[in-house]
Length: 186
Image: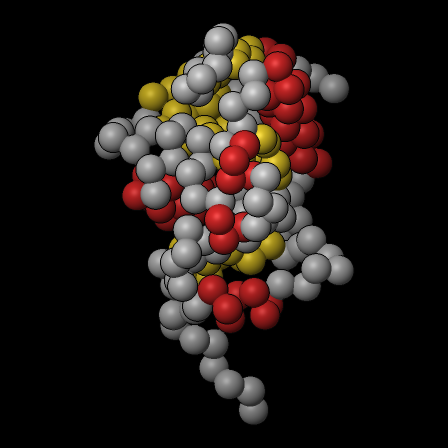
């Protein structure tokens, strides 16, 4: 008979679960709680790709950060945390290290909701991102065609139904993407 699953996981235990030869399931860890996500729907992946491409084009002009997508190993040095946001931006100086352990200042984070991630994205991970002072957190609800906007100081989200905007420090113009563009039919 095997060992029972631990009640409290460590980052090293979760790293041992990750099989780099396959992307799913995705394992994440927040405050010792293991979060497991199955493969996402195709619509989820399309929204992630649209957001990633738009941010990449913006950051090619406004050299204030670099955008990446999951998989990742973001822990802020915590032994009880590993997250893999769908889309995220770190400052260029931290990204140029190519070392997850040195990426500490997340400028933007976006999670696209899936049926299996509703609670963890809206509550568990959101509280972590606020604690870690992630400057802007977008919870993208592609089915409802809206985006919840969180900053570290907010107790409740703001809701965007027309456009998302991000104006990082050092950028001459803000990033703006209409939700019509983000959620357009294929």
